[in-house]
Length: 241
Ligand SMILES: Nc1nc2c(ncn2[C@@H]2O[C@H](COP(=O)(O)OP(=O)(O)OP(=O)(O)O)[C@@H](O)[C@H]2O)c(=O)[nH]1
Ligand SMILES: [Mg+2]
Image (cartoon, rainbow, N blue to C red; front, side):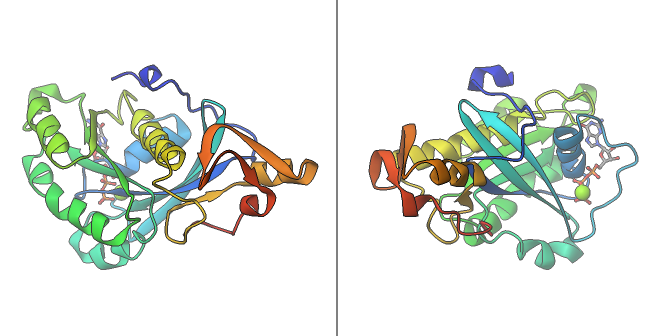
C-alpha cells in the first residue's frame, strides 16, 4: 500500500517535535531489519550489511498531519546469542516493526515468538507492524501475501510487504505505527505522561508553553481533557525509555 493513503509524509524537519516515540525493530537474523531502517533514515540501500551486534540506535523526525514526531529507533540483533541483550531494549517501546523475509519461511514461522516477547516486555499499548521484507525477490517467495495478511489479522497487527533494496514501502511501516499511536493518544487509550508508554511530549510543545499558559491541541485529546491541555501537563519528562 503506498504511504500517501495514510495521509502523511516522512519529511525531515527541524529538531522541534510534538512527540517522542520509542520503536523496536525485531525479527529473525538476516531478514533485513538493519537495511530497512537504514533506507528509512538515509534514503538508500545499505550495502554489505553485517549482522547487528546487540542493538544499534538511530532516529528520525517525521511529520504526520500537523504533528512532528521524533522516532527513537532501536535496531535489534536477530541472532539467538543476542536475544537476551536485545530483549532488554524492548521495555517501554510504543511501536514494534516486526520483520520477516518473504523468501525465508522459517523467519515467518518464528513470528509468534517475536511477537510474544515484544508484547510481554514493551508498552501494554504496543502497536506492531508486520513487514514482509525482500519483496523484490518475488521469484524466491516462500510466504504468500495472503497467508501473512491472515496471520497479521489474527494477531491484531498491521501488515505490509516492503523492499529495503528498491525502497518500496520502507517508510510506510514507521509512519503507520506512528499514526496508530497518535490515534491511541487521541482516543485516550494511551497516555504519554504515563511511565512506560513509550511516548513523551516533545520540545515543540515546550516552546509553545513558553509563549502561552494554555495550549491548543487541535483535534487531539490530550489525556483526560479534550481540546486543551493545562500548562503543567505539557512539560516533557525526559526521554520516553
Ligand atoms: N534482495 C534483498 N535483499 C535484502 C533486502 N533487505 C536486506 N537484504 C539483504 O539481506 C541481508 C541481511 O540484511 P540485514 O539488514 O543485515 O539483516 P538483519 O535483519 O539486520 O540481520 P541481523 O542484524 O543479524 O538481525 C543482507 O545481505 C542484505 O543485503 C531486500 O529488501 N531485498
Ligand atoms: Mg541487523
